[in-house]
Length: 143
Image 1 (cartoon, rainbow, N blue to C red):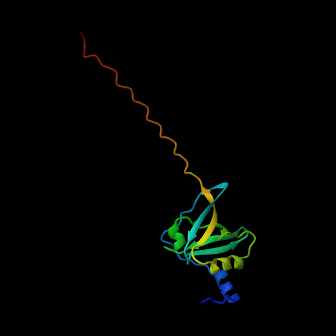
Image 2 (spheres, rainbow, N blue to C red):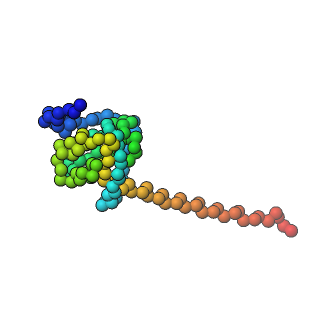
């Protein structure tokens, strides 16, 4: 049975902001400028992702705790949606992208762009303490 998509449904999807705090919350990531990488992931529905519309496109706004996206460990908060089942998302409307996701049969292939995680800076080695000089030998008296 196919549900009819109405403008109220689209408004609901657009305004829906899931504020579920995930038990597997992603930690904030330090990012290197201009080092975006893409990841391809196949997910069963429901995806367990809430997208937000931004000037850069749709970004992952929230993950449902223990949902398919969260369990995949390949989807991160702030990732930008590049394509859905080979449908390029750049320049497409929120509704057009949601239609592709809703109409998808079987697993959904998402290509996501995310910033590379900067490596942790290496800690400077702690200098070894300076050796203490041995006390000078004291003669035991006159010989």
